[in-house]
Length: 131
Image (cartoon, rainbow, N blue to C red; front, side):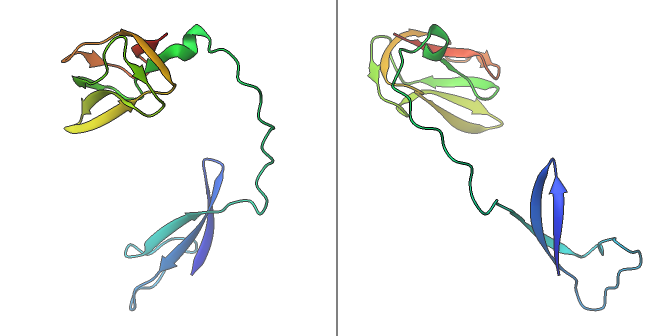
C-alpha cells in the first residue's frame, strides 16, 4: 500500500507493508508491525538555476573556514602558509568517537590556524583563515 505523507513541508511517498494476520483496528492507524520506506517526492520540473555570475573577490567572512559540528580537534593537517585547493584536508575533528574531516571551502593560502589539537570547538566556530 502506498501513502503520501507531508513532514516539515516536504512530501514523501511511503510504501507500507502489512504482515499477514495483522489487521488495522482504527481508521488511519498503522499496525505495529508495519514497515515503511520513505522516498522524497520531487517536482516534475526543477526550478531554473540562475545564470553564473562573474567571480568576485572573497569578503573577509568568506575567507574563514568554520566548523560544521561540535567536536574536539584531533589533528591539524594544514600549515600556515600552505596553499590549499577546494576540498583539501584542513583539520580532523573527533565527535562521538568518529573522525570528521574538515576540508578547505576555497582555494588559497592558509593565513591562520585558529584552533589547537585537543581544543573543543562548537558549530560555526572559526577553524582557519585564508589569505
